[in-house]
Length: 69
Length: 264
Image (cartoon, rainbow over the protein chains, first blue to last red):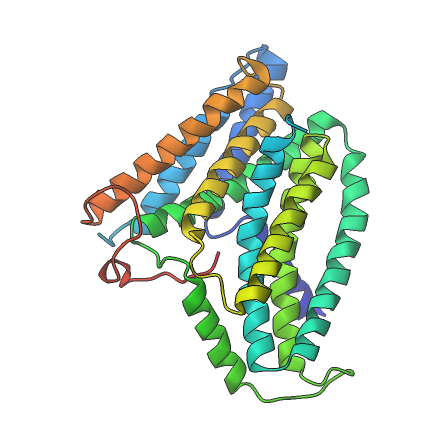
């Protein structure tokens, strides 16, 4: 049972998060920041989430290729 | 219908990629083992997928649009960035290109080596499980794309049409050629799907977080090309770093000597 639950969790982790959890973490933090800015400071930071996506992708690619050139 | 065309096209391309991968696995199981157990596995996977759609579909539509866009946008953006990451690594030669012909040969070799065991009324358990897992896994991605895109646009019907056309086209082609669809430019399609998923996910996620986009929905027409340009720029940058010249494209065999695997 424990093994089945573990593999079930591993499947969904791999399905949603994938190879690099940092990308998911950066996107969640960026969306939380955008929500905070919009609802608390009244600032519509539309540029924040795309920039975070580009930064997350660049960082993840750099990590994946480090020392392989 | 014209307004729904981008939605239908996006879902169609994304689901075509998934359907091609499922077809490769089903063909490997059916042609090397036996079709009866392969079809049983496919049918079982379709029943599970239908149950997931029946539960998830109505549940997700109960969410308020803002919450839906935030959650689904975040998931789509994360999902899209995964696709883009793999596609860029492939284009830059750091990861082997996804090749349906070699994926098929791997599955065939494994299928030939496995013993024929009868279990739970299924005459060939290996063919059943291979087909079941392949259709369920790729089908889950289709379900995810259809539900997220359809619900967010409040047009589930158009998303279902896009997916259905993709599945029918790939299945009919598979039946006609009885071979994996190796000539389809799958890696470029994956690159395009990654761009669309990331663009829509970023747009909806930010909107769900309370952001107002300049130009409202028209911002997507700028966002998607920017995501494409930045991704191509990363691919070119990595190709140069990797010692490959020219624009991003399929790398040479030598360039993929340190393959990281071919999944996805």
